[in-house]
Image 1 (cartoon, rainbow, N blue to C red):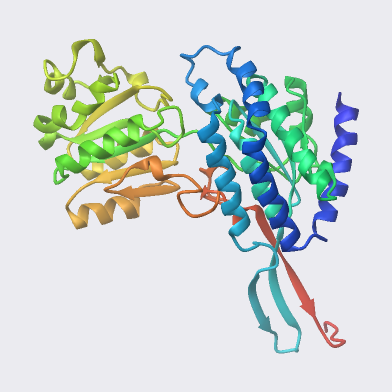
Image 2 (image 1 turned 60 degrees about the vertical axis):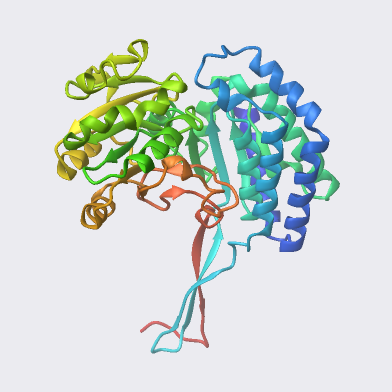
Length: 417
């Protein structure tokens, strides 16, 4: 398997070099054509997706991530159109100056090269990654999970047909076999893949980080908190908590732990009341549990144990932590956060400013839902993932985050003394 994959990756490298010859108009024309073909080929994609869904338990938190339907396909097509409408991130002049010796220096953006993505259960990622990488001049190597195998194959076949019809090499995007052995080869394909980005569970991210020789950008796992401050508006908080927890509980920006100021425990039942209608199970700490007892459905109310904090639930479950103020809230977040998305609900400008300045997260929110952590919502067209690290990129990774830069030096015969 290793030699076969390496041979395929060598063809991807050759295709990546040819991407630099494509004009912006040619790139955009292909993306717009692909977007139009998605609804036209919906039956083919959805049939493949149904084959994948039949192999997964509907109660599995990954089920919603795996699911495609007509509306989701239309949303994917619209995201691709949004990517096409954005300016190219390649060739931007980032810096320019002339040295005292007359050398002319220019720093310009360039593609990363070959971007490898290893991901679980999310066939939409296949479309998102291709559109962003193609627009930014990068070739793409994909390693999807076996649970989305049929969906990914159908999507890549559609992309290949579109590339071929536009006279562009199909090796611009390559889907590796679903077998686990392919992942090991991918993670160590130094010189054939320039960067690897894992998208999925913390377990997947830890595996990639621990086994990759190729440089890695970590994305994905979100252990998300929202702190309801002593000055928080109850009506606003109720709407925000409901949206952050239940809009799509299986995604990484969903709320996992509600932190509540001790002075607002009397309002806690009102704050979480709408969650009962969605059958959200609440794991309440020693102070929050009595405040909810008899005021939240008993079958949905549980006493929190240590393992209920620092957990990415990806389901209709949530923990509640009681604190005495901002310092305790920040300390709890610092202990358990994955540095993805963190929020405060507060009417106190000083407390809000302190939270936003000091919380260590890729995205920090005040008085709004963490559900907005998304490349499309940020105006990036789509996203490769949410980077939770601090090198190269942080937060939603869009087109610009898929570029590096090079220095261009022009002279008139200067030599260094």
